[in-house]
Length: 238
Image 1 (cartoon, rainbow, N blue to C red):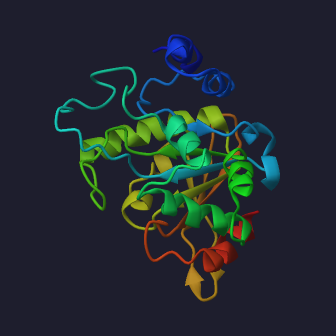
Image 2 (image 1 turned 180 degrees about the vertical axis):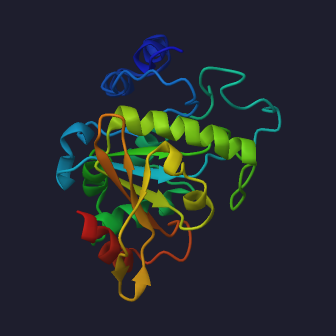
């Protein structure tokens, strides 16, 4: 497999100098099962405004291209149409689409305030973001196959070993959370965590070097997500 930095270098002629400079800041990562490479904020390693390394875990990308019928690492080293880092940078550049409110609601639940464009940049440059499934789904509110989640577990384990997060925030308390790697892959159940009479799904992953990455799950911010209430949950870990 080819490190991200080598893949980026081959594309520098296709992007303007600002994007080229930004992309070259991304850490070189070699991951065998990762098709959709993570966004890694430029201040992630230091924890940025949070003072700790936070990995935000989404579930999937979506693709409506009818001509795209072979998706995933079995067919290519990376997707040429969907790039997680470019998508988030596109949002931070002020662009709006039907999915951007999901990210806006979540970022506000990290800081408990309405966020300005500059504040959004501070937040996303302080965290990493990765989508669990390594195939794109054809629409929202859909899940992958058992094989998709199995491949996602392998990719996720590679990502956390590389990024060494202090805190992992999972988008979803049911389908995604229930498909995370189990005890055989380092999962440790957490003690009961109750916020405002709600039991927060939580635990840890013990990484190969002995480090424990804290894990909590929140509702998916695409719907029924009150960012000021969820700040109460997330702030217990910040």
